[in-house]
Length: 248
Image 1 (cartoon, helix red, strand yellow):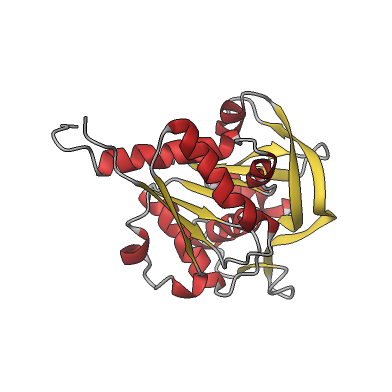
Image 2 (cartoon, one colour):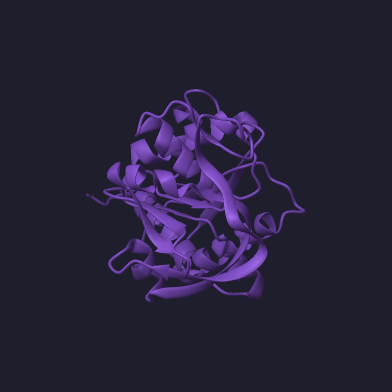
């Protein structure tokens, strides 16, 4: 029996070994890969190394994860990577800063809001799509209610989850309706109704969470959203690189 192709995951962000989420992500991927019997090969991609256009670099990856710890060294490069995932159907997971930049990328390149920006890096921008949270969620745990029928609810097999955060910025509610009109749906909210999960309609796998599901791995737990992302990347790898002798 021919061996399955390696599954390559690109981690978009600026690796810092002191960041808890960066410590957790390799463990989270390893837990998901071990459970599925996959040869998973993640690679950290510092934002300063992502070219314009990014296709020559990013096309070798079967999944892209935009990781926490923003602002990034090169915000535009992170947005290029997210856009690549969105436009090419590459499975995408964004967590914490990845959520914020997925929202920003969609506002700029789908809604056409060229001035859309992030309050952390440009607080005087005309179109602040990402703004400070009502209450900062630094080292906090909270409840998220998932939309029935959403990918997140299906992955987690429940409508309510509790997750860990290290975050101070989120989606400006004033832009939520426009984003949803452009296909980026809010599918998870906190008890006050603020957006905590978004998903892109019609994409093989595109989920972004303001919380950090990777932290479950620090307790030795495999998070279902990470597992689903890895499974989607494995499906893309199998479609692009079928074992010798297999006809698709």
